[in-house]
Amino acid sequence: MRHAEFSTSSISATLPTAPTRPAEALGGGAGFGKAFAAVQGEVAEFIQNGGGASAPELTPEGSLWRNRSAASVLAAPETDEGSTNEDQQAFLDSIAPWAKEAADRLGVAPELVQAHAALESGWGQRPIRSGDGASSHNLFGIKAGGKWDGAVAESATTEYVGGAAVKTKERFRSYPDGASAFRDYAKMLLDNPRYKGAIGAGNDAHAFAQGLAKGGYATDPAYAAKLARLAGKLQGNG
Image 1 (cartoon, rainbow, N blue to C red):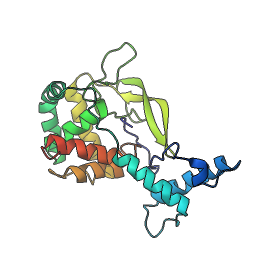
Image 2: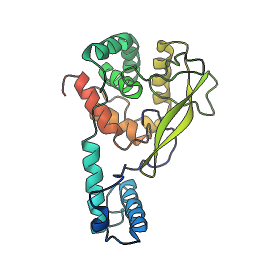
Image 3: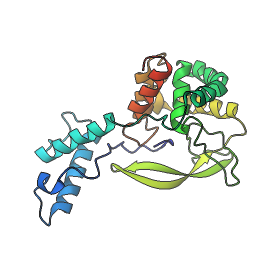
């Protein structure tokens, strides 16, 4: 979730792992496991197609699971659990100059960049570290793809594949300092046309978050909602 996914695959929604009384909901019996998997796939396909006219019609069971999935996304906890207001403000103050510089280049409010850094790094409490424990200064979870020729830090992360959270290890970009990290973040967004929806969003937290999510920044299906909510909080709207 918290690290960027630079692939062109569709983003699937997370499905609940176990509904209330699942056997009754899907007919029960020995074939429950097969039916359960079928409904998961049906809902995932529906969401991947945008839920519009081109999406397959959902069965009653599929509609039930889609509604439960939406409810679980809306009920997602805030990302600042475990941090005090003082901790949060100290983090925001520490990155403020770099966030403003990046925001000016991107045409967005500094609070949106600060919120993105806070979401990806857990308010700076979950930094990506290199093998020797040193900080990579990578507050945005940017992965080290084939074109990256700088330093690299390998770290555990969570990705969503087919609606399921999967723990994996990935290679991330590592920077000499925070300023370099924010400058590379702005450059990466500006250079990649997939994120054009986020560029020039101004104070619109929802447009910025949706632009990143639609570009495939993360595989977490609730990513845009989480980022927009956090950004709104920093802007005094939440």
